[in-house]
Image (cartoon, rainbow, N blue to C red; front, side, top):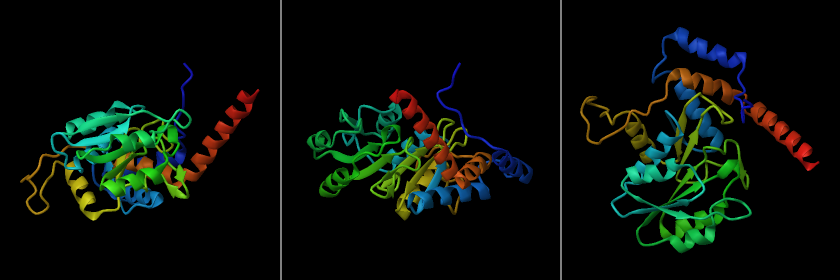
Length: 262
């Protein structure tokens, strides 16, 4: 079997994971988690990073942060993974699907505008195959109608829209660090946001909504969506050489383009 892609793993990756193992901090706390969260958030131009178990659980938390009521709508593209729709459904909302632009494969902005109703609460933008969606008109629509923007940037690590990183343009963004992504932690994901209140609630939701002062009392139903410090150690190592990884992927893409040109 010829794999579609392979993770770029090095001895440096193995060394940081081994360092984590030797430290004993192998579960859901430790310095690698903090470094990975803050480092990736800063790279994308966001204040807060909340590491989670995968990209799907990142979307589940993002949808939960919308505080949807029955009948509330979230607009999203048809051309995406089912995780987007199921996150909204599990949060109590209704996915509203729009087609993609035939040229860019990104969600059609005119269709988004036509689908906005008094029940619309958010637009979930998906940067398909790492190509940025046309964000300016979507951000303008969101501002005009007082809507939240969720960016599903699971495939858009390092991609830019007019000089700004994908994942740093909306109210909330989500990433995946699965093995086929530019940065991998094996399995893993992250929620990014600028807002302190959303970050605090996302951290609570990730960890069963324990109260900060009385740990085993709960005022809200949460999830066990934690990432381990071992996985974060791999993420930190990958983040430290992210530009090298991107350059390698660009070289591979250029080789394909040249050969396919004929």
